[in-house]
Length: 320
Image 1 (cartoon, rainbow, N blue to C red):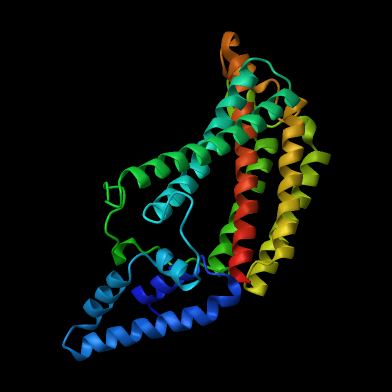
Image 2: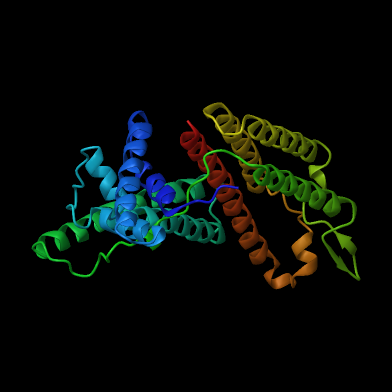
């Protein structure tokens, strides 16, 4: 088994923002330069690991070095804080819009809004949050960059090799296949258990299912067919050793089908057993709990489908 070195991680991090056409040549050039500098330090008496760490520390942030290699200026807010601003903005975009969308969806659901109103509100708030994050973070860093007059105000610490990210997997391994098949198997088993045994037991009613019994056999049958396609897709991706645009697109279609069907059934009050919460929750709060659970279920379905689809396209892009 090969061991990942700091140089491997540094080159991988630097090449993430390099255009694909230049990536192989620049990676080879950068690796050769690092090896030469490490060898020179070793000849002077340094230990190899210490020499490698010292060379990478001198080179600095790999993204900044990649920008120099490709003549890509770090502008917009200014060169000193550009990478800090961009990393913070991406982190906020990954967290805040989803939280805002969930809060709006839950509030609209509790207020009795219909499905169309909820979708419209969520879409408008999400877009507004994304735009505002981009604008206000850029404005703050723009002001800081110019008011600091070239001095560091403490927003950027000294870069060290300890900040290097792990190498991102560009293909797909056996663990991915096993995880996908196990997840699908557990999901299918849970659905069958819910129907033939039940989700919760009460002395008054016995075992009761969480999903609506009316989903059988056609809706659940269609879901099982889609799960078989998901399993075949996972096997196909493993056999090819990587994601590509075609498999990512198929994955997107499957996710849209499952998520769209679940949202439609929720909007028609046909997904969750209508008697479930009336039995397990006190009557005066069952309606509120039902509404909250439906909102959580809808948001979870959309979040999982979106994450899985985006992740597949990112893996396909890395594997090109």
